[in-house]
Length: 267
Length: 109
Image (cartoon, rainbow over all chains, first blue to last red; front, side, top):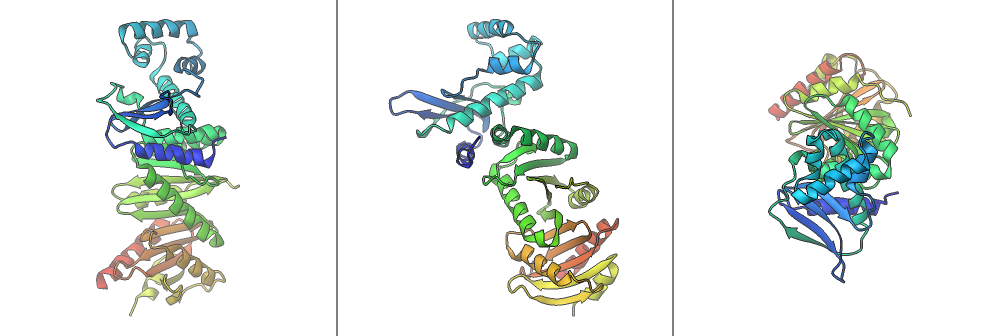
């Protein structure tokens, strides 16, 4: 299980990413060998690698899509290597994997490798790069990666939270969920928060948690707040704190109407 | 002279309207419509919720039976309007009325 310190380390790593920059955050050992790296393109995470992480992307793809054989993927892999073609895009172009499966597999590989990489006890260094040429749809925001890494520790809870969020988040809204007992407030799941600053998400979760704690004596179920045109609703379901965000005209009223009609499962 | 009785009579199913001081925790003024046992405790909790200056100036809390509406005055951030009403289908109306009242108070300050 992921420790809170590992979660915080992931958060710190993602905060180290220079905004809109391209390059690699590298962990190199004193003997000059590389423990791993996190590749970044225009402020988005493209790929993570760690010597400690045993799975290859091809392993995950075969596990995710049962119509794909290791033999097929190895053939495409060899061809891509020989002709300098991107593996993911080629697999999609040939109809061997769907874009959502590729996206999911890449995110899983990146998060699991990063989870291993943060456990190394060597310093990080930043190496600037002009860009790796990753398709933007196959790169990830810090919030997506943090939620992905967090989900490694609590996969069932994360899957349930994501399903619940998807059933709640409407057009023009965003939402995220955090595990209440976790000290890091890293999102367990998120919908539409890809572009939201990680510190802002954590601050919202901390604020919501504080209000729930202070207002516990009056049995508060749902809290709504308005911040400079942004409406925010939060509530707890078992050990998960949900936060819905909505901006624009009448955002507060729309969110109020939605959450007032919502049924919160009893613990 | 504040207009707490006015807002208390306008908000459907209003229990209490009050001005609280988040610095001292004191209820500066209140207009109780329904003298329910929980009013003192509810105002105390409301003051605690808004005590942190990091709290947004406008908040609504929902319990199974009540709606708690808070507005912090820009001119005096320690002064918070608290209106509590029974939870009913009129939540939107209650929230809009309290918002208008708070805006009028802020404009008059």
